[in-house]
Length: 195
Length: 221
Image (cartoon, rainbow over all chains, first blue to last red; front, side, top):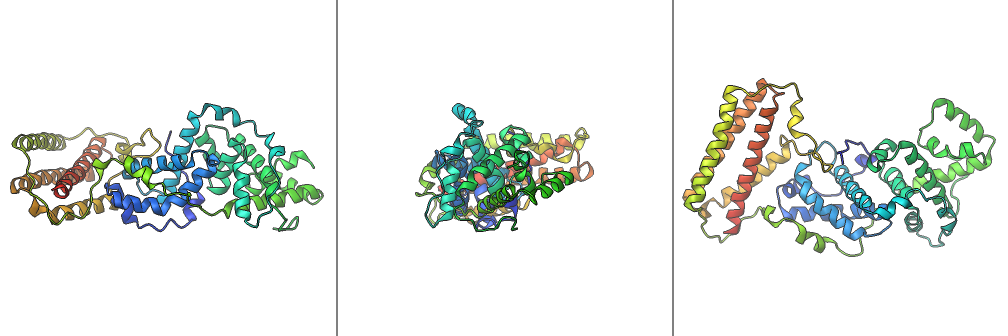
């Protein structure tokens, strides 16, 4: 897969609290420094992997991401923030796994039926968790694109390159995912037309 | 609901419509309450997605990662206090010296006789790899910092090494530094020369590898 020189809103998110010297030391082979990098970035990397995979093999894939990071850390050039670079690496690891999953190919385009299968919004007070649960129930294609676009901040042309689909398909799947998820918003918090 | 416009609501939110389409949709929204409600709901979905917070896994994943790291590449930075002396065997020293003479001598010869100039960009030596992540240009502060750390660790454990080994290491490092300096000077005159870029990158990688091995010996002792 080609390296993607993509800009992402992740750039504007403060990087995890890990000194860049730890990254440099880890790149030079220091396992203790690498563990510090792992601990600083684990929550965000794990969340990205879990959301993209709906939790399937999320632990194993997250471990794969950090093993790959260990192998590739010396190639980090600093052209983007380390967090952005790491997330891109994580997305690539997940997508590589997707490509080995033959069954998933069929699921990428069968998103319509899920509309009626999704339950309504849960009545718990943790709206974030409700939303996460609803996210996991989306069909694979719609969920991956929603996570990449609305959570991770990738553009449609970037997603199209990553997933080897057209930008139009990316837009259609994103809209489909949003239409499904709007049923899980719970009580309305804004009035129509309000911005 | 007007399906034609409903399908464009996400494009509207993401500013993917042409000015003309945007104006038409906004005109439609003034008369279609259903589309207006849907638009607000979609906006809330987008806002909710942007507000998601990271959640760590239920269990620590490090125990499944640490054994998979290549231990050979690990270079602790703190040398042990009590370390034994370490020495190369004579065949190892001879082989290392010969290899370095050949590599550095060849590089210097090519530098002196001129590498073939190319029209390619200076970064051609660092073309992206096939695995999705571009290889490093070593001309960055992280490389210098790693070298400085390794040199510091080596200096701290220098007394634990056999004097003969130290002498060989210093000779080799001097030769590599000389090759690096010559490459830099040559690149100043011909920055687009791919061979010189490759030669510089190779010399710096050899220096990093040699320092890693040396500090590993210090800590192994």
